[in-house]
Length: 134
Image 1: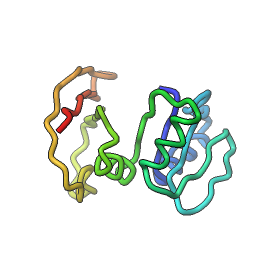
Image 2: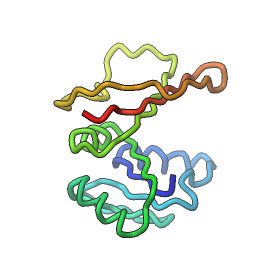
Image 3: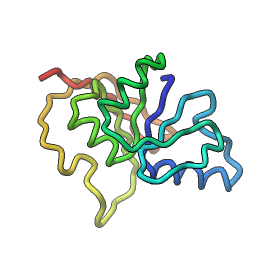
Image 4: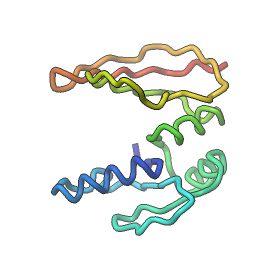
């Protein structure tokens, strides 16, 4: 992956890790933060407040070849626009009494083909799926 598009909450979470001594996790990657407020751009990241399809046109013109999208609202907007060809889901062993639905509000049904499963650290499970064109 050469480009990341993240939502504001995901971006703020990553910044909070820096205060605990973690290095910038997106080092060497173009990072776009989808937000209606600015970002300080301490590591080359920039803000974007438009539609996902227009952002993808801009990124392709800039030479982006593989874009990783993260953050619930951002993922839903890219899914609704038909811009994703794969999904990676991380299962974290924590029961939440309540939470935000990852795909809530997306009026899209798509078949998924399992592309891979990996356990991480003996606790996490990563599921990789390809979206079938529909």
